[in-house]
Amino acid sequence: MANTRQQILILHLAEPDLGAATVAWALFDGTRPAGDQQMQAGDQAQPPYASVVDAMYHGWRVLQTPRLPTYPRGAEYETGPLPWEYVLERFAAADNANDD
Image 1 (cartoon, rainbow, N blue to C red):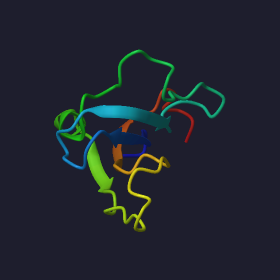
Image 2: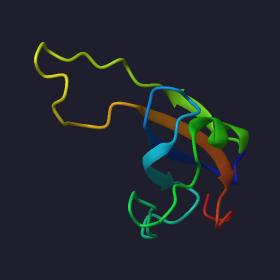
Image 3: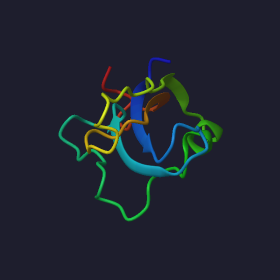
């Protein structure tokens, strides 16, 4: 595993179901040099994966699932952070394997 690097994928879903649609995302890719552009929500028309289950099918492992949000009485419809955030990881070959 010396020539592999970690990739972190954060998917925000429309609902807590692992098969729900991805609505926002970010990718942090350790396989590329630090100066390279990282993928962020909004820089692509389509998310990299339709759902967490789709990402899992392509080799991503789920590291963190969201906690059920609690809303104070009367604030059920307030806006705020996207509540259904999943953190995934995988290891992939580094762009420059001689960089160890």
